[in-house]
Image (spheres, rainbow, N blue to C red):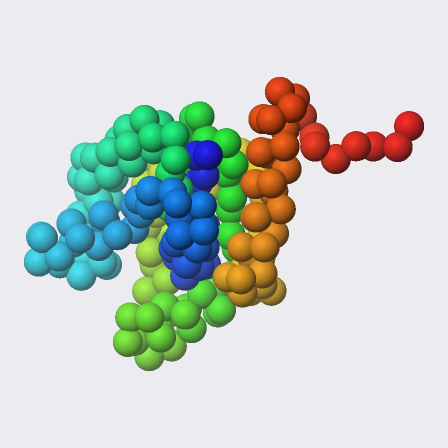
Length: 190
């Protein structure tokens, strides 16, 4: 099973991806963690490193190429990242998580030890920076959710509820594979 989990900053993608990796014994790779690690290696905070990425396409391209290579080569993996659902062409299941900007900023404030106003500005700037880069580098409109199999609200559902929904989707996909079928696993009356 090859799964991607994508969504804007603070939407809970890492939490859901870790849940799935643990539950299904999948390898876990996170583009966000790679980005944060590279920022630290460069002695920059995330905003500064995001600005560097805006002026140097090789930063994003290196992260995205590595994620794509690892994700497409492994058959038992969950790949978490803003573009993973678009980059991993052979994914079995593509998930997009969403939540309001305010909700995500509060989560980021708690996670990163910021005050809420600072987190709101940071989240808004980061989201704009990433959307601008994705459009410029890959001609991807990050707001186009058509590549995703499932779009879920992490503002409405916590990680356990999100996991339960995705568990159902995975069970459906496994039944389809077992039956050699394609298309919907839900039978329609008729």
